[in-house]
Image 1 (cartoon, helix red, strand yellow):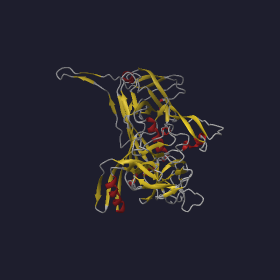
Image 2: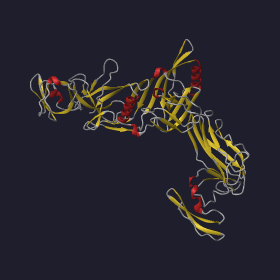
Image 3: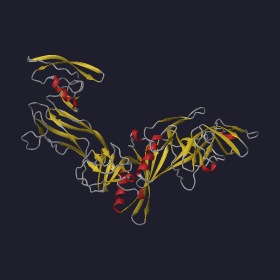
Image 4: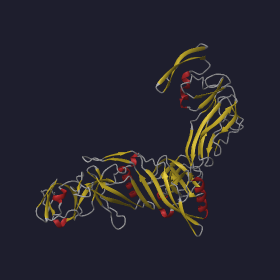
Length: 587
């Protein structure tokens, strides 16, 4: 609306034209009312009020006979200088979209009787959501005095009664309906409500052994004459947790019943491998939980489970957190002692079917696979800052872990074969060089290191981005002294001049000396000196003279990408994990 006021009104009535804006369009309305009604400018503060109001009209929506109800949104383009607000009953609240419900949620709902002289009565309250959603303080017929709300019983000073809209975990798994309030004036107020009830999976995974799968999505468009084009079509990776749960006694019985009723629905999945402990006791109703949160996968807007056992817990949304505390959006329903388990929690679905084994004495094991639905990773999380760099890209020159006793490797080249099975076989390739495939392994023994590796994985985005990695092996053997001021390096003849011809990925190398210093060079050209030696010319002079005995290793640096959009993080306790990723040399 235009910030317009009609000043100096002295007559018994007045006429004016005002404008209301609705998106890109504007409409003009004529106002003709008595001056005892509030000035139009005085209603601008109502712009923050939202809700729905229904007014009885003759003939119903669109006119006609028989009576009915006309629905109007407060302060929409039908708002007319106070005509819609006064002499009506309103609910001053937005639509209640509760989202995922893992524990009891209490919200406030406000009613206002805008009649200036008339007390109104709530005739009926229709709860279309059914069991698990209620307003306990409302019991028709309840009265609302003029220009007020529901009042506390016996109120003599018009003390408003705060109404609680309470949603519990009981009831239908999903609801998207309305609460209807009918008043004796004929007004029907409709409040939309929706939500999804989620069951917390309260069983700790066996032995802290959890496999986490991060699955990105990349379209790869090969190009033989230039860099391969890769297009990321998934903002965040899909996340899957795989674990085993071994239960007995009451836990076994609880799990059996949970799976029977809820296997096709959503769960709150606590991240047991990323748990924290509260550093001090918290009281009933607290919204601040003291805890050390460094290098924990907490997310603002995400869920946190405060857990004692399967019968004593709270699931709350995280409003904010600092290195020493977590602020939650809902007061805790219980008091908790210092050292209480705090679990970042995700919303996920069990991937059918759940297989298990029963043991002779009242115990069972179940293999669980949870597909996570709310893996919304902040963009700022992706980072390669904790790793070395080369040429503006990450250089992963930390130790390369081997999965088992050896590391697999493969040389791949696309070869076209022409064979009529009766004559000479002809074959050729349109690839200038073969592509080498191998793997990179990470070992994390602290929360910080695991956090850094996770940041790197999100930075690389599966097969999207390239990085550099050493071969971690002796690729060239220096045979003569490296002389200061020259750019020559004599090495053992291994066919470099004949086959490699100074081409990537075997042109850039890192040379390490006995004093632990390193230099990076790129081969510009090479020539055979004899059957046993070759001479390489590199891109920069040697800064000092080094003998062949002072060289400990010469290893090539390869520009590579991950060769899979799926990465598995094998969690084996808090801050302990192993990650092995396949890599492919960038063509």
